[in-house]
Amino acid sequence: MLPNLLAVLAHPDDEALMCGGVLAQHAEGGARAAVVTATWAADSPRAGELADSLTALGLGEAPRMLGYADHRVPESAPGRPRWCDVPLENAVGELVAHIRQVRPDVVVTHDAYGQLTGHPDHRYTHQMALLAVAAAGLARRYPDAGPPWQPSALYLATHPDSGTADLGELLHQVGKSVLSVPDQHVSATVDVRPWLARKWAAILAHRSQVERERPLPGILSRLPEEVRHRVIGTEYYTRISLAHSPGLTHLAP
Image (cartoon, rainbow, N blue to C red; front, side):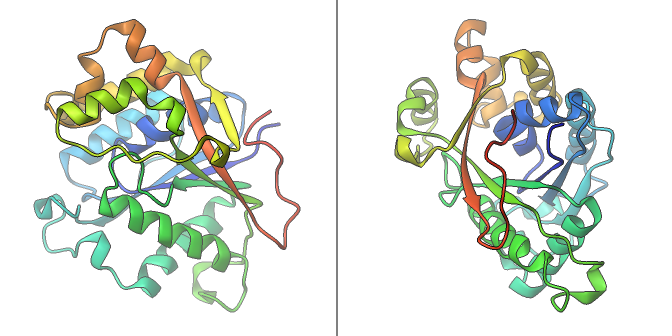
């Protein structure tokens, strides 16, 4: 049986791009798989795209959206603060509540760089997820957020130096940075080609991003199929063990 999984991510489309294959794999295998998305309002067009993406991945749950504003798009959540400006205690408390509701064995989030492009929302989500995973198992932390629950491990979606050749060049062409980690930092390399159709359908569900030049869904949509499959057919993760838990030896068998 695959472990139950909760992805804690910054934006609609991160779930498809960063860990769509693993989410689809776990959902197909009978595990519970859910996603918390920090930014964009629940009544925005991108919320509908997120719902379509989760459906494409085979997740049976509605989007869990915190509803804060994107760092670079204040109109993404009118009247709400930017996610990066939310006080630490509030941000962690909201994530703890979702962890305790879902009760995942494994939490997945962004790496410390904030993925290849270093988006501020990605970095803040990484920091808040680490704190929330640690706090979720402590009964006296956020007691109103539900009974304590301790995930066994935290996985950071990342990219190794050796795995960025195709994508790095494409990102450089649209003026984006490429931040990757040394290969030895990667502790789980997952071949997601069996779930590639679901992952690609989930990426395409983010129509507003596919139509634009600079977002990654748009970049991927313009690639030859062979190159695109090479870029999105493998997912990489760094495993963070929790000292007080035996943890899991693999993200998936």
